[in-house]
Image (cartoon, rainbow, N blue to C red; front, side):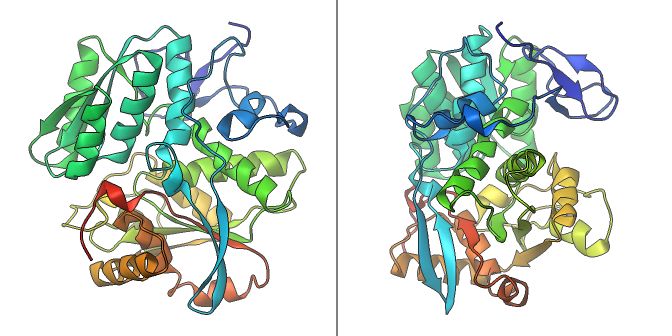
Length: 373
């Protein structure tokens, strides 16, 4: 490799090679990158657009050829929402219809560069569809373990890319167990939650927003949070921008969860540092039905470090907001509507930031669920 890359356990600090077959440390710690160099804005490639404009800012070997479907460079629209000026970042217009393409592009680039030929992932929908597309592009065999409650359009999307879709009955966690079993028998566990390359890909949204807003950070971001991969990618990206002296402060980060499955919300309200698992009940926001988020503790730390908050919204609020968005021309999946629904609860906090920009990423396209209004 042209660049030395290594993972490190965030708990015991043991180092691992990036092609390790471990997806977390035996001590229970999660992986991050070791010794990333400081962000240098001179590395931004002026002649490129999208995720790969920021290639030099990412922990990738320069010799690895990018696996791309044209991800990134999504529109940032200023809209009037209930009398308040808000920016919508249209991640729903990514190649497979969700923000997951940022992470998948970087993860699959690394996998192909490392010589991985067969992968497995567990997903309720968007991550699996995205990984299926990018592995197809890279010529890597892909298996996706999904809960049998996953939306039909998402399953069809995975299958059309050529992935082997394995439906698992029962809890969402059972799909993860099935993926781990497949990994124990030779497949590489290409997890969008555990693998640091995926999180590095979601960082690019921070860099893109920084440029679109005139090289400044938004005052605040409001995001739907299940496992928190976009939330943490944004936090990491803006932290790197601040460390490089390119922004004066971090944006306030607000996390929105469905009241039907609110483990991070409950931990935030209780003032604790550890997110305890909850039993999800049915929710329209199926992408947020994560009862035991692996990186929930990291999300809590990011919320508190940015003086943000976690809120929860009801099924009625999700449905009503989904309809209101559609009537304004934004056809998103219900998971995306959760963050917009949270704006009503956050009016007091957000008013303090006027006229500074507040951004809400619309994370997934409505065609992925296709429920009639």
